[in-house]
Length: 233
Length: 233
DNA sequence: TTGATTAATTAGACCGGTACAATTAAGATA
DNA sequence: TATCTTAATTGTACCGGTCTAATTAATCAA
Image (cartoon, rainbow over all chains, first blue to last red):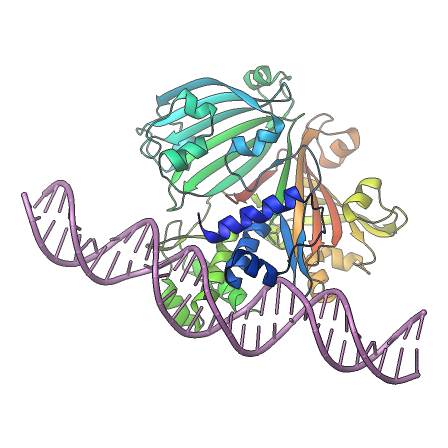
C-alpha cells in the first residue's frame, strides 16, 4: 500500500479510536511528518484524501480539524468503497434473484460503451435494511472485463473481487439520480404501492483507464432512502 | 488568483473551445509545464482539481483524457459554484417570495450551529426551468456571518456576493437527500398533486474555517429533477 | 480591561528534483 | 504475421526545501 494511503487509514482509525468529535484538532503537520517519518507533501496528500472523503478540513494558520457529519442513518454517495462496505453498519442482507449472462439493454450498452451483441453479466437482487426492503438493484457488468462471476462473489463484495481477484483498478464513477413513481412490479418488490415515490440511482463505474465496466441501477424505497454527499466547491 | 486555479480554468476553456470529446487526449504534463511555465507539481495540482470536478481523468503511462459525461439536462451536485452559475445553461429564472430577518427553525439552528435566539436571513423562492417550476428553495443564512442581504443580491448570485462582496471564503458543503411525498402546500407551489414524489436536497455550506453559514432546503419537482454526481472512490 | 500592534504558529503554494510504475511503441524472434 | 521482449513515453509517489498567507498568541499602549 502507498504511504499516503496508509497514513490516511491510520488517521481515520485514530479519529475513530479517540472518539474525536466535529471540530476537534488533529496533530499539526510537523508532528504528523515526524510521527510517520515522511515528508510534508506525503502527509498533505493523505490529508487531501481525507478532505475529499469529508473526514477532516484544514484551516491555514490554525490546524487540521475533524469534520464528522453527525446525521445518522444516511448512506454515503461518495467514498463508495463497494456498496457492501458502505452499508455494513446498516446490517444489510440481500437476496440474489437473478445472475446470468445475457445481451445488454440499449441503455446498458450505451453506458458501458459496448455493442448490443456483446455479453454482460446481469445481476438482480433486493437489498434489505433493518428487516425492510431498501432497494432493487440491477447491475450489468461488461463480460470482456469482468470475465467471471458467481453467486458467492456477488454475496460478498463484488468490488473487492474485481480489485483483488481480477486485479483491476477501479477509477471513478458517474452517478445519476432520478425521482419518479413506482410501477406495479417495483411496488410489489418493495412492498409499496404503485405510484409511490421512488429514487433511481444509476452509476457507471470506470477503471482507472477510463473503461466503463459496470452499469448499475438502484431503485430505492422512498421510506428508507437517506443519502449523504460531500460537495466539491 | 492562484497559479494552479488559473491553469485549471485555462484547460477547461481549452476543452470547451476545441470541443474535445470524451476520451480525447490533452497535452502531456511536460508540455503543460513549459506552456504555462510552472513546475510539475503545480500542473499536477491543476489536474487534480479538474479530476475532482470530473472534467478529466489521468492514466499513468498513457496521458490525460477528457471525461465528458454526455447526458443532457442534468444538474450537477458537485462543483457547486453557486446555484445560479450551475444552472445558467438551463435558463432558470426565479421569483423571490420572501426575504426577511427572523429566528431560525430548530432544524436550521442545529445545522447552522446557532441558538434559537440568533438572527438569520430567511429567503424563500421558486425556481423555474423551461417555463416550468423546478423547485421551492428555502435558505437560512447566519446573520452574524452574512451581515446583509437584499433582493438584488439574491436575484444575482448570493455565493458571488459572499465571496466578492463580503470577502468570505467558502470551504465545503454537506448535502443530504430525501425522497418523500409532497404536502398540500408544496404541491400547490409546484403545480403538482399532493402525495406526488418529491426530492428534498438539504445543504449546509461552511466557510473554510468550518463555520456553517447557510442552510438550504430545496424541494424538487420530480418531473424535472435530474442530478449528476461524480463519485469519489 | 480593552484594543491595537507585533510575533509566533501553522497550513498552503510552489519549485525542482529522483525514483517508480503503467502504458505504449519499437524491435526482435519465431 | 503474430508474439514475445525491450525500450521509450508518461503520469505518480515521494523528498526536502523556500516563501507566503491566515490564524492565534503575546506584547504593548491607552
